[in-house]
Image (cartoon, rainbow, N blue to C red; front, side, top):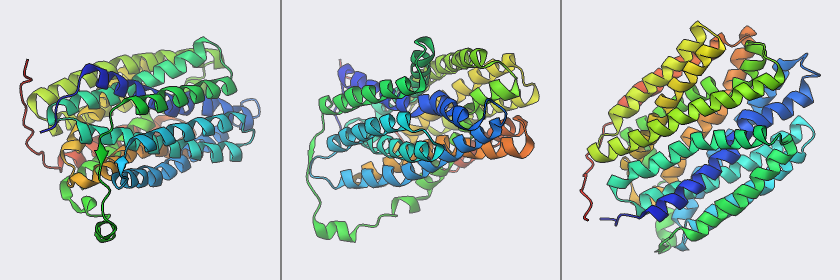
Length: 412
């Protein structure tokens, strides 16, 4: 039985994830769309090109993350000594360097190449940090740690976008700010968090290891696919908000940026509340699957509301519903995934896959969304598919059987 960790551990872990989400989602929501819109739209006359290129770049970065995350997790599983720390530090520093390169990129091709590096660095650091949940936490604290990951995702968006908009930072200044942040906080937290020494596996054991055995576990596989699909639905409903405000609701650029911040704040408040509530509920009851499935259905309501009546007011309502649904889904879903891990010696790799399922959904969503917008010359199909995929993600998650979680009362 693993010993319970204290508040200091959870605080550092939360700060690390807050930084990871800031450097990944602030460019996605604000910096990349503005950068590409300036490079491609010719003053707004060809705005669909900016949407399409933004989606392509984020999608390609997502594919790079799919490869890098599980690979880094697998290598950290087989690293002797302090196996997670070097990967968390290395991923953070790689992210910082590539954020600087993205900021200085002056063509879409260079932006795309640099963003691939950012995606790889984030995936490597995320895999290492996620593995700490399985390495060090007992079952009845995994919901709290998962809540830290989920609430930090929402807070990362609002803090990152808020700093850029409130301080009036240029696109380049925004990238440089994020680069310094991940280099200091991302790497610093990895050095301060405990990382127990592990024994390196023998070469013979590594050669005999079946790299795909976890994916053949049906419960783990259903959970994984459901997590990916629901995250695509979330990304469709949130990642193109700036373009929706500019060209769907026809708002002026300054008003659209201010309203984007308001949407992000609303989304964040509800994600944080729902994440904490969902994490505490799942730890106290041991139930993971049912709240995850219900949350996916709540998320679907967001896309439906905006699709049926596309105004800024209904978009605010949609952001609140999306926050509630995604906050619970991401938190209880990650705890559910941790409970379903089939093989202890593969925690790093398997949680890297779990992490990538969420990240890939968030990064491929804009690429799919760009195609949907281009296909109909508007945004209704984008939000309709967000609702459909959210429901589908919940139904797929329902196919995974829940394992019994022993809930223990802490000794005081």
